[in-house]
Amino acid sequence: MYCKNCGTKLDDMAYTCPNCGCKTDNPYYEENRQNTAKSGKNLVVAGLLALFLGLLGIHNFYLGYKKRGMVQLLLTLGSVFLFLIPFLSSVLFVLFGPHLHRALGPGFGLGLFSFVSLYTAIEVFGVGIWVLIEAVLIFLGKIPDSDGRPLV
Image 1 (cartoon, rainbow, N blue to C red):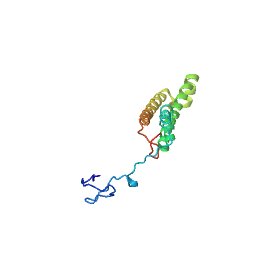
Image 2 (cartoon, rainbow, N blue to C red):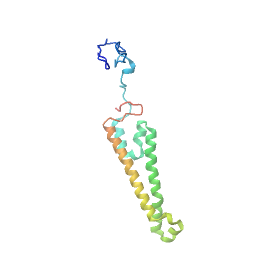
Image 3 (tube, rainbow, N blue to C red):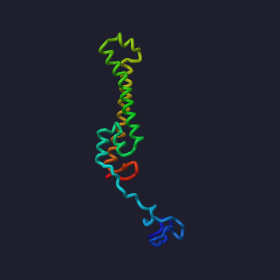
Image 4 (cartoon, one colour):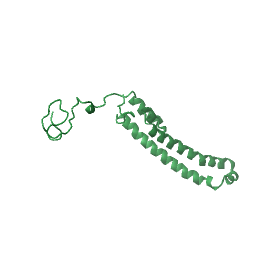
């Protein structure tokens, strides 16, 4: 074994280099060992959850990433809720005519519906791209569980 810093030949049990004092990568010492324990989480299950329920962040909850899962869930549910307000107003306008629409106020028109629909589509599309990237990374084994252990 050789020192990674100065190239001095080292004893196989050396902790530091006697020439430069640099710490070695000797696997004999606990701090240099890689965490080889596998996660109890299944890679295929996590990937399928990301593909089919990813907009709700279910795959992140499964892997233990609660904050990331909450962000995805709230973004999706918030945009759907925001979409419902002008959508229902527009349905009422179509069904019951302009009289009810005037009673609701000018802010509940088809223009608001169009703007909110566009905003909702962009937001859900953005979260969808995020989830699709996460699904690919999960299937490639690049995303571990929340403890840093690789998926089974």
